[in-house]
Image 1: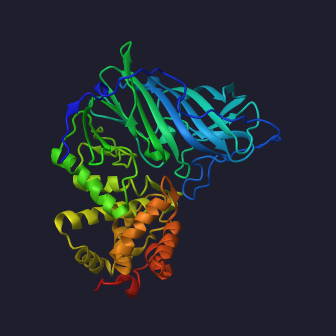
Image 2: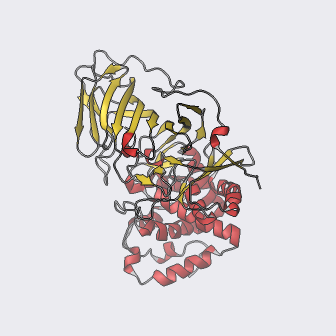
Image 3: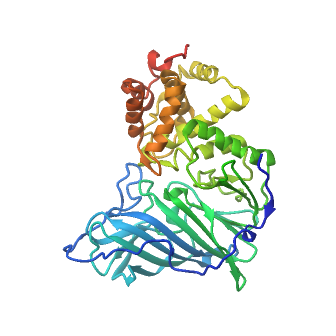
Length: 477
């Protein structure tokens, strides 16, 4: 197994960094104005069937450059300076960004002050640029903001730290964004904190500097990311580093009052290797974990698939790690299109735990399948929620019946076709989005079989599947 060692993460990172305005790597915007008429406003929401006001219309984001200043002892004095790099999908006379709370101190579009800034609804920042932005033009929006953070995504930690993460609209709570999973973008974080605190984010660490009693940390994730998979954890961290066999960095960060379980940490490379054998190559340039201790009264804290570095409470075990790491493929690499598609993430991540149990402990998945079906055959409530379009709150059905459906599909197609299908699906939709109907169509095309009846029975029906779909292939009752 790779060895690990404790160290202050700042010892790894050395270079210069200032509280800046944007990423030096990003391309300069093209000329955005011209004879585009008066244009029209971008929609204040994307019309998601469950969260219609999530996200915004009229543009696609390519990159977020987020700079924040925060003292965990005085979180109400938060400052933010975010540049959103986007491309207009229509002639834009005005557009919205999602940001909950805070005071907006200044907004510029391509360096020119916005002519009007308004706040509407729960989290809309309505921006009117000095000139209409032409369809197809790239543009930069810089928003400077400050004040007291609000929202369920802010989590106070035992020991005084802060963790920012959650679903479904966590980005809205700390940086202006197009906060919907259909608009993925690369991400960089610059965080300035008092000396003695460590900041962990997504992706790979960048340069770190100290001065005037403050330490500046930088992280960057160069693969497109859904906004809810972004994170920032501030705590007095113990950080372990190692690598996967191919050299991919592993960064495990432990906050105060957390448990470091070396056996779980050392099995992480094996989990990645195993999941890669089932789903295809690991999709990102780093991996690891963020382990923090939320205050006991925090009912909104989640174990969550923050991209490259899932977040856990108190400790992580191989079972929880398998689920969240499986999300790096299903949920993060291939993300769902809207919130009806929860099965794209949860059904596969939950089934990954069963695959691991089969591999690691010799569990018989057929026996488990038959036992559950036998127990639930006569319970109509167990079958009453469809796996696609199952409701705004992720239902237990995704975790209970989703793995049953995938195991039935595996037995129907056979292992070779089933796992080849999953790997090809990951390659085809890499760094993008797919709906559950997309997966159904892909599975049918890839397998060369008519799966309409199977998916109707398992994903769209609210009754127990008929016999041929309940016990397909080598599955016997």
